[in-house]
Image 1 (tube, rainbow, N blue to C red):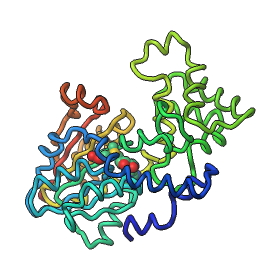
Image 2: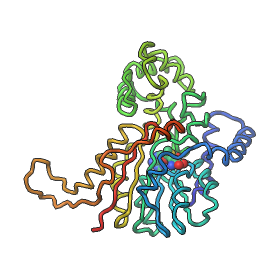
Image 3: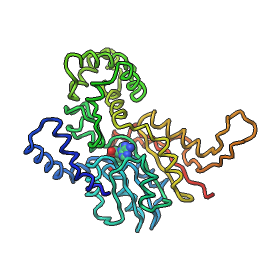
Image 4: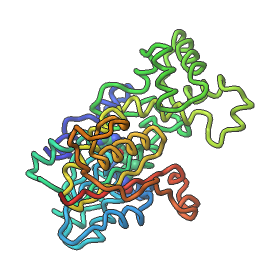
Length: 352
Ligand SMILES: C[S@@+](CC[C@H](N)C(=O)[O-])C[C@H]1O[C@@H](n2cnc3c(N)ncnc32)[C@H](O)[C@@H]1O
């Protein structure tokens, strides 16, 4: 099924119906989005592009997968770097697929773009009849295209509905999560996905506040967080006081870490000999999963470390190209502050 086929299911309309916007306004908003398509994709500057190309080494006629296509910034550079190469682009966000389609139009049939979750990678490649690929890229997290669209509710800087879904066909929104989770669940979520020091306070405040009136807007949540984190700690933070709360909610709403380890294992298995994997992550929880999976596959053996002789028979599948994660250059961070927390890890599939 194509991305546009999936869009025809009307998921955009469902989002706006939830907000109680009249039909005419919905149509105007949809035209606006389409008109803006070409402008919006220009806003997402792909991160660590030179490093991605250095590790992927796109070769003429090669087959690549961009498992987090976004606005197609990396995909464009991969296709541009190797004549006759082909790329399968996956994203669960229909608007990202639209933006990437506009950007990659010039590559015609060389780019095959699909609205899917990357957890479905192995099944999807089987459906497409693909048995191995030359390179795979994961650029995890959220794009500027998503962050900057106030109506999608990812940003505390732009007031909008507390939505935060990458895939608008999904039911659970951030507002629903905040309305139904217990104090304990919210505390855990803020700690694990946001490493938020004031998780318990924020969770308690959310539950107290929703007793009077549900939290519906990003501005309301940002103000609530600002009102419970002590002022003297707010001034010590390098970023907005609500940054970690918003990150944690987004990760939870989109189940960003749920299938990541399994997906990375599947990705390494689908690489052909000397095929390469690049993963860019933006927070420590993500990077920890990437590091552990890559080390496990590079080791092969899963016997307990103290066992003197291997009995599992596991053989290494990949070799690590980065012992430590690569970080963006100071120049890149100055030009694109979104890159500041990026960490890139890369691996190569062994020939056996
Ligand atoms: C950082 S952006 C990628 C930007 C892209 N590399 C570019 O240069 O334009 C991450 C993208 O991954 C998508 N995404 C996140 N989790 C996903 C998942 N489980 N399956 C598919 N796409 C996902 C998001 O919708 C978002 O568009």
